[in-house]
Amino acid sequence: MTTSSVLAAIARDLAPVLDFVENSAYAKRWGDPSISDFVFGNPHDMPLPGIANALTRWTEPEDKNWYAYQRNEPDAVATVVSSLRESHGLAFEPEDVFLTPGAFGALSVTLRALLDPGDEVVFLSPPWFFYEAMIRLAGAAPVRVRLEPPAFDPDPAAVEAALTERTRAIILNTPHNPSGRLYGHDELAAVAGVLRTAAGRNGRPITVLADEAYRRILFDGRSFTSPAAVYDDTIVLYTYGKTLLAPGERFGYAALHPSMENRPALREALTLSQIVGGWQFPNAILQKAIGDLNALSIDVGALQARRDRLAAALPEMGYELIVPEGTFYMLVRSPVEDDVAFTESLAAHDVFVGPGTIFELPGWLRLSLTANDDMVERSLPGFAAALDAVRPN
Image (tube, rainbow, N blue to C red; front, side, top):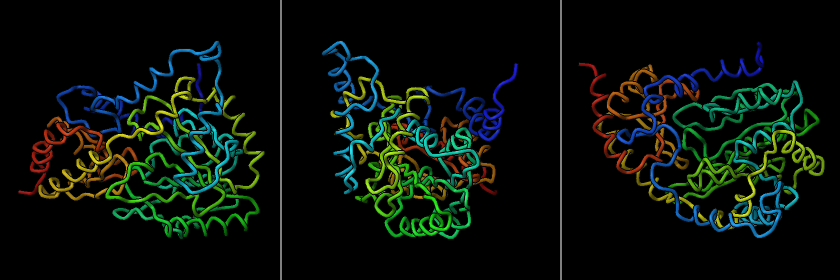
């Protein structure tokens, strides 16, 4: 029996991630309440009470179609449109909002709707784990543009060098996972200028896929600028899973910029992609509950307090780190070249972090600030002991 050669190639590309998830010390200890778990953006405290209240409220059926097939239901879409108009200052239209199972689903639906074989999609590295794999699965070629630490600035010249006549889209993630960088108006406008020039030269649009999963997770009173503010040919991708810290409840959307060209054709393509891609709509109860869920948020101040605690304690020990402006994550430089090996050293002290190698950033570690306060305090002696063990005598 043979299996898909495309998936086999994707598995090879994802080997560092898959090996960590399946074979690391973390794989053996995941879920152990005694560890300090900084690996992924999972909850380590009880969920927001409002989530259960909303789901319970909308579970009781009011008519025979309560649990029937649901597409982009008008009431749910109206909530998203109102939220987008307020947050982005743009007149998004209900016809241009497509409800999906999270931003993961939104990206999947959008890539299928846009791409033909031979197209290219640019993404910024270090990336979210699955950008490259999803581009390949959609039949296109991924093109990587490096963000250089510690600034992780998007370099317009590097983006320009990556663009060809086959470029169909670019994924821009702000705030950026894993660096925590929040890109401002001028940075985004500089990239937008390069895209407009290339699109004019190519005679077809280059679409920005704006991954805004963390746009409500901002620190120090910062404000968010969407790529849609500087570039009309943008599709906004969003998930409520981060804001609610409930990644297992899959609700998100893709939204077309109201000034985007060729929206009628894109609307048809996105709807068909939702259907034939495996009915990629949120389930019925989530759609009904979104009016309640949209108003909820985890305590961003508590995340910032954990950031500040680690940002004070780790440098005192001798670690170098990048203080994030948003997202769930903090980057810490590994004190030894082999970040995977140092991750295992920390694990021996019951401290579990993500090695930078699994998101194309060798020599670094990623810590999730969704670890609870007790985990943070318990971890500090382990961080110190692991670092002491590799210091030169």
